[in-house]
Length: 152
Image (cartoon, rainbow, N blue to C red; front, side):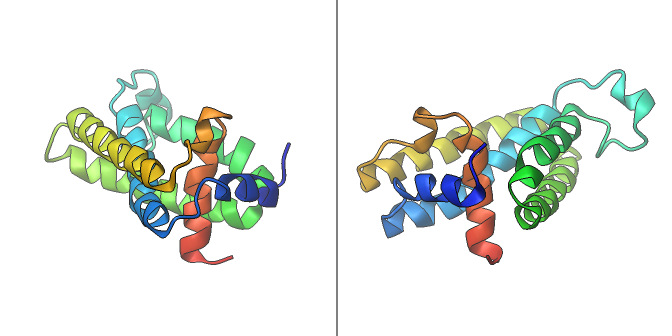
């Protein structure tokens, strides 16, 4: 497995343009947030009888725990904690949003708009998105943004 620095160095190659970086600071967390919302929208059936609260009795919680343990914390405890806090924020805010609007439609709309932003940013950059070479960059992107925003 690559180190955190190796992932970030590879990711940075196609993220040099200030406009693209600014777009990523908005769109990458938005995509992560919307994916959490989409997974929260999947009927959770059996999870409701195992887990005590709707914020954690859903497939997003299960996948986030696995992703945090198997990817983020293995890279770095600091990045793991940053992503844990962001993941918790995503779960709680998606839960609140679901009380007022259809979470699946809200998340789908946000997902589409954020990806349009991402592809525009890469057009400005003149580089293809990193995930085209390796899907793991879909997990590296949010960590890169959190790391840049909240300290090294």
